[in-house]
Length: 623
Image 1 (tube, rainbow, N blue to C red):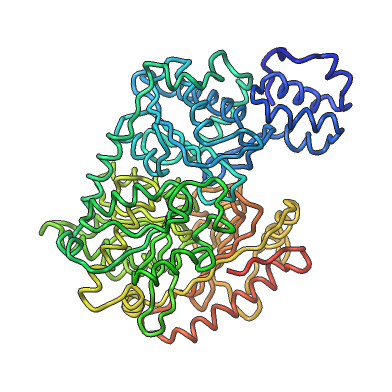
Image 2 (cartoon, rainbow, N blue to C red; image 1 turned 45 degrees about the vertical axis):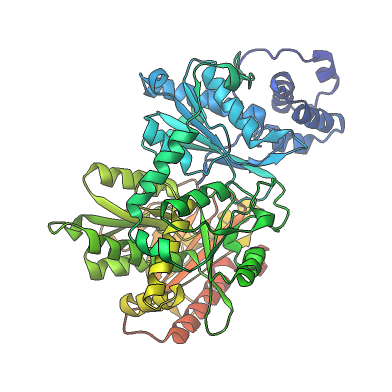
């Protein structure tokens, strides 16, 4: 845990009397009870100690949070591996130390802090309080802090870092996770989430200074320090102004009779989506009254993740039917993702688009608008679109036909953000980037996924298409018929036993003997295998993966002879083995039902031969 001197105000006799007989655990308990000033979380540890629950104490206190695909994320509660006042203070102290080493002008440029609307009564833990403590650590060290006076969408933090020239920023959010969770997302000066090696170095710095400094607990500094500024109005105004750069048909938006329903899933999105629609000239979307205001209990949904589709969109779909609105947009609780549903004319049923289907629409839209509005000497070869490697290859198909560049990154928007910044610095133009889990980046004002901008872009697209007598669903079919059907299925298995997960992937690496990957899966021949955990790629002349090696998570991609691409990977934030499978057909292969059947059979073979759920005790979640 890192040793930072003798703990303070704890009765040492009490601790000796309650010794667990495990020196490492005793020290961790001692540290926790000495340092934690949150009565609720302190009592949780005292009570476990009193009840002799040593295993749970060890689980909570003998390991530390580490950065996953979306920063630090965990349940709220007591312990060094949970999100709470103390671990947020420790994380911020580590970040301060790291930034101080890296930026001589840290105390001139400052730091951005934002937060969502999460909270938990049992551990007296809320996003706002955690944000205040984050700010306190820095203000106590004379760092100027741009602290938002109210909750904001996650994209506002990276946007503010760039706009204000800050060295970094933190957003307190667990996005669409269950209500028990919270998180700590760190953005670098480039406006993108941190990637390696920053994450590893920050963890080292956290471990070097785990004891709270004087002033770190003083959350009132946010209200009293002259170094604190509220960037809310400036950032909101600039963001809405920048948004207009990707508005192409304002006159249509002003006149349209189309109605839109928006749900913000009990999170931060309502006010900001209303403003975005106004910036594009639209009437405000109709809010779902039961879900428009923040509610940390997410009381109307089983889980606050719009990715779960129709089951969680129930209230918005019923309201849309009542209001005769044909399109529903849903932002997740921190408004960085977007789900879209459209009522189908012939059946009255709702089509909830997948992330990959929306990407096909966004990709077509952003490129066709570019083509229509670019200068005569613009070079299409200077234009880029990006996607994470587990997302649909539809942009690759569009790029091949239209002449722009398509690139893949590792999963997680942090990789996209960093790469986009790199391309922009080299004079390239980036129109769009996405990940299949409904994360979209339209334009480059924000180098992260952004549900607010995506919501208003889809509204403009639907309005434009209505003028052509087309729906979003009909346009999607046109795109697939032009560039080739890309049919994908994504789902996951739950597995709470890390050794089992490791064993599954190690078996695939030694399938036909040591260091030999499978040549086929059931009846399906495998053309290429890429394993970014080890850095192997059979399709490359030197057998090395072009994507960076990512040892901390498991991920193997199989390219099959029939055009299917399938990836198995572990989740960065949850106990899951995910699979992503996509049938990438050529434009002339346009029998959708044949392609869907082939994909389904291949997925069944993949599950049976590679994951062996019965043998490995995996719980299936069908998507």
